[in-house]
Length: 322
Image (tube, rainbow, N blue to C red; front, side):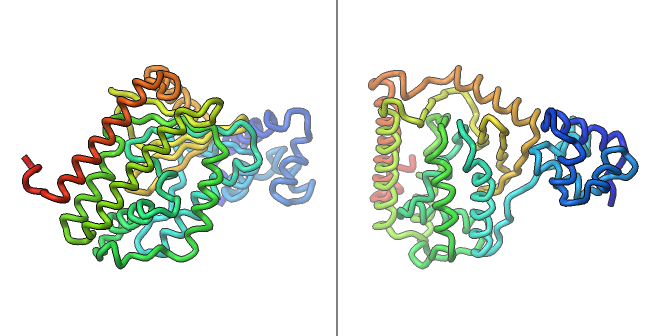
């Protein structure tokens, strides 16, 4: 299959020319595609068309969005993460996610922006009981196979990919926007599976204490001077778990469509607009790093009281229902 028309090929070549600046366009095409100088010359001179596969290779090699090249500026062609239907799919999902973040491994000035509708994924992959529970919840939601939490085992070879994701997160300059509802879904999930008889009371209590410990660590990170972690509180913003990873060279946006599923795009214009939107929302949010001890304590104390409420529900669920 060939690229649809020569105007698209001309646009692609024009973008590559800008990327390489004063270098040889023919040589740039030849190197990226692994073809001869003559074969590259025929494509650059428009004597032959790029195949779709060649266009994709060129876009990936030179970090160009193929979306606008092939479909026009108002349409996006996105990749998506692995669909999870069986436990083995979970491993492939985390490997794919780690591979995307690995692209930034040798880049400088990496930033990560997270609109946290739920507690960010990066907190849920640390080998704790809470991280195991979240994997269990995701598997239940995505596969519909119900079994007790106590009989759930981690998918094989998952930890190596989780470690790569955690390493990428720790390297980045992180900006997270939370609100009062960010922790709610996890608190409710613990209670739901307890009430359903799929989670023991002992483990439910331990999970709530894990939540308390997680929040204590986040609060401590807010207090670090010259740290790379920035937490913002926004009372009005409807958060959606969108993620943007940014460097000087390029940006990648992850857009959720299921519990764990993300559409992924590196379209330059789209990612830049989303990045600018994040910056505007940050300006209208309260920095829990800079706003002082009082505001920070108010936020985290309120979260702590929610945990206390759910622990009481474990002991007397019916009394607190009304």
